[in-house]
Image 1 (tube, helix red, strand yellow):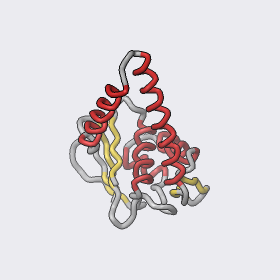
Image 2 (spheres, one colour):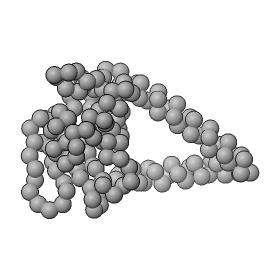
Image 3 (tube, one colour):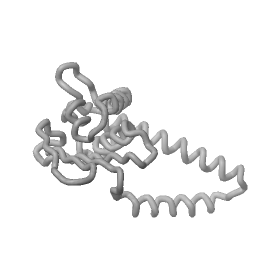
Image 4 (cartoon, helix red, strand yellow):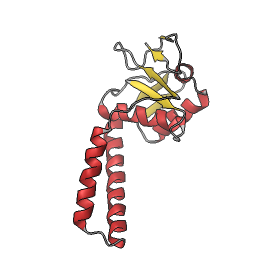
Amino acid sequence: MKLIISSVSGKPIYQQIEDQIRSAILSGDLAAGEGLPSLRHLARELRVSVLTVTRAYNELAQEGLVENIQGKGTFVMDRGNEVMRRQLQNRVQNLLQEAVQVSAQAGMGPEWVRTNLEQVLDDTVSDSVPERGAGETSGSVSASGPFSSAGRRRPGKGTESWLQ
């Protein structure tokens, strides 16, 4: 798993970290009980403030996806996947209801909504692999564990760092 941070995306860095870890938990890349990197280690690898990583971890803990254990670290919760999927399903349902209401107010029929939803789905699937550009930082995770505590930086230009 790679964490890709973009300073030009317009999205807060803590939210980028949070979204990518949430996605890894939902996809099963991070299993229940697995530890996240320490706050300082991830902050150093991504070249961001420890407070930024702390905020991302705290948001995930409030959602029930991870648990912060003082002195030990942050770990993926056993039921995090189910809790998050239910939350996401509710959010999507609410957004779809809002879209239908707005389109009805604008005089757009159900067929227009279906057609455009299919187009958005097709576009989203083809755009699901993010491309990195200028102003982005990344950290990757080794095959020996999703977040290893041993890390090194690859020399070179740019703002990329690798966790190994």
